[in-house]
Image 1 (spheres, rainbow, N blue to C red):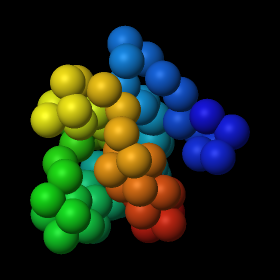
Image 2: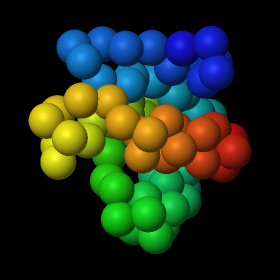
Image 3: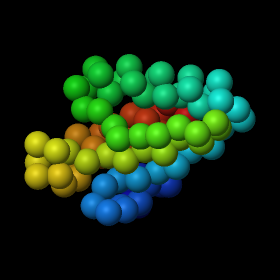
Image 4: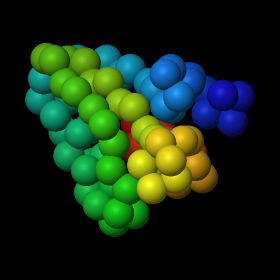
Length: 81
């Protein structure tokens, strides 16, 4: 996605992988994302292993398709970096 550098479409979802210095930094990032996602009432599918965070975004209420909500949340996630 040219408007969202680092994001790509994988299995019909916006997908990005992040790497941090350590677990604490990764978890801190996830906490910030969780607060933003909760504010938007739009929540990611994600996983964390040590210093890595993997995020997938899709809108279930839109038939499991990428929507403007996903694009907006991805941009907000990028702004947290």
